[in-house]
Length: 358
Image 1 (cartoon, rainbow, N blue to C red):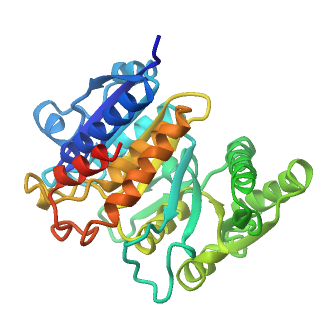
Image 2: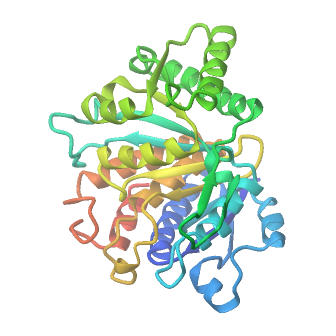
């Protein structure tokens, strides 16, 4: 009997439903080819539901999500909803409640995709950023007093415990070891810790000591390196070929992965995973809801298709994941651009082409 995967689908806001439709089109095509199935359950969490009901995501819905094999997310963000409400009430609540403690962000330049970096090609830009996803400054420790007065005080604290740091590093070292076994070019490069330990002397020191101790004791065969986050930003631009697996804390990871998206060709091709290695993970395109493009059929679905590819890999369907990436690569070589409205084909035509190649 064929394997059936239960997938929760949250199309979300703006162009989210458009790109999710193409990702699902590709998933169904590759499932038919490889002999497994998807059972899809759609949820309407997002801006429209919030405006109608005042709900972001309920505790009962979080419990429902625990029962799925994976979650496929379109985008969250609505122009009529104050920034922060949907992001914290839906995205962060899912990540924290389901303990998706790894944010996995491949930074890979595909053939025929433009990068703003002069003289850099696919052979130079092929690395992964692992962002710790449930700790740090985003946990909301801190507060505000005397709000609205000249004496207002606001604090937001970067808080980390050793367990949270260690489990993120464990995943990063494990991924580095796996990549080294796949390709010799990866093995020549180090795993890089990115922080700001010269100024953030407490949290930075915790991350650095944990990184060095784990590397020396459990992964002595792996090369290690360290970058301050400001230096890493420079090297991402000047020498992206130096990197293979980079691991960092939550806030820095949020920032540097957007830089990574730009050097790999833009948010139209950037995908990410919120991973719980022992539980339910969630996959999404990185470009946001892009409401100005909604309904125009010009948004690039490639990032959503890439998120579907990542989901397949995490589910253990490695052959299917590789087939999707091959089809994506072939399709991108036929597109005029990865920029919305300049692709030379519509949103659905891109999805049709990828699915057709499967």
